[in-house]
Image (cartoon, rainbow over all chains, first blue to last red):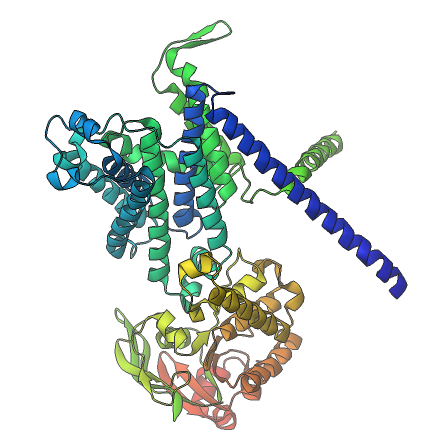
Amino acid sequence: MSGFNGRSYPGLVGMLDGRKRRNLALSIVAVIVITVFLYMAQNGFILDAYGVRILRLCAVYSICALSLNLIQGYTGQFSLGSAGFMALGAYVTSILSMTDANREAVYYLKPMAPWLMKIHLDYGIALILGGVLAGLVALLIGIPVLRLKGDYLSIATLGFSEIIRIVLNNAQSISNGATGLKNIDPTANIWWCFCALVLVLLFMTRLFHSSYGRAFLAIRDDEVAAEAMGISIFKHKMMAFVASAVIAGIGGGLMASVLGAVTPVLFRHMMSYDILLIMVLGGTGTMTGALLGGFIYIIAKEALRFMDSGFAIGFIQVPAIAGLRMVMFSVLLMIVVLFYHKGLSGGKEFSWDRLFGFPKKIAARFSKKSEKAGAGK
Amino acid sequence: MSVLRTEHVTMRFGGVTAVDDLNLHVEKGEIVAVIGPNGAGKTTAFNQITGVYTPTEGKIFLEPVNSSQEVDITGMRPDKIVSMGIARTFQNIRLFSKQTVLDNVLIAQHLHVKSTLPGAIFYWPNYCKEEKAMREKAMHLLERVGLADNCGDLATSLPYGLQRRLEIARALATNPKLLLLDEPAAGMNPTETLELTHFVREIRDEFQLTILLIEHHMQIIMDISDRIYVLEFGKTIADGVPAEIQNNQRVIDAYLGVVEDA
């Protein structure tokens, strides 16, 4: 018996090792393929400028969805303030890194505040500062807001996000008011966007393998029990809220550079809902979900553009209705919520094993269905 | 000196007085039971001691971990009270349902983590040491309660009796001095109940605990407890050693008389 065990055990280990080795190899290949793809895209070999812009937006929206995921998916606090923090990041980054010539051209209604005129920063530093400022504002907002729970919390964060937008709308000498900022340097190329995305992913992976991440998850699962286990609820909610705001701020800073222009209108509550939609579509509480959601949402939004300008299905001519593609998204979201309530990621993180197990799972599901149908007859 | 002492603790919800002038004390190493019919205010008393409710009147004193000085803990935040050495389990099990058995025990050790958030994220050596120690302690506790083999399972996938044990392991992970058990034997069969009795005594000796428990199973209470408090409609109607309580006419009328076969 022991001989049998002795022989079969290394074999089992070998098999497991083999699978691990395969996964490692696949991961390395995937990283290389993606890097090469991004390199070629950045240098205009595969995608035109339009395609590159969409790719950058995909990464930016994924970052924002990850930020919302941190506070809502992982910590269970339903915040609808994403747009406000993104706006802060976008404005701080753009204003601080703008050239003097551009500043004069943009602030034509009322010149920029003199103290602000003196500050010139590199895009990278401005981006970090944008995140930091968003975090600081989150710290201030969090003190009253994080005492609320559930729906009340989301309404309060939504309100604060609107306050941020209205301040930006009226602080003429700082944010250029409703006219917004134009001609923002397109510094945030593919590398910026995807490096930021990878850094955010690494940050979150580490966080949720650490004791603090476990505390966040505990608060999401059962606040009363978490508190009874000695976790300071307010302190940890605050940490998650601030971390989420910093990430949203960085996402906003990148977004401003990708879009080239920002106005306060861009950061209305609709932006928060977009981010929420991405997160729910992909799967709340998973990083895979935020990525899937971000890429699918942005690409589909572009691909469905034809719906807004009228099209034909066979003989039926659909007239041009602006916003029809958003209706399409609502339908898509309803389908996801009804049939895949854990989102497209199924509530689980990506792994090669799951990917390879997928065809089998589908096959199993179909054979079960046909069995049922057979039994019915 | 008492590990826990309450002075005239009262809890009113509107016109209802759930706990009325509770004066209890628990000495070091004792196992003290609080019994009483449904709605007698037992769990409310627990919630006051653990900081979930602030008493309307009265004071609660605790002798914290690593200290012999009594501290007034009335109205403190629950997490503060846990860090001073009171851990609890819940009447209706409240495990972190989407976490593994191991993670449940790890979460309960978070309050002792000294590293900062950046330290935890950037693998600073101090944090790695802490994480390793936490895992070792968690595995030790799980072995102790017989759940080491289940450490990777989802907490809610465990059978009921094991979930109770996990809840106790999780409470122990906070390093308590005083352990509050809210109906630990609820829903258990006689064998499991007997096991639990031994288990509670064992952990009391092994971890040098003081235990305060709420229970309905008369058998457990008579077996296990050094002293008993009997509540009825929030009022303490009797206290004493099990033999006294068994023969106390008021208790029999209020409680034992009703449940003859318990």
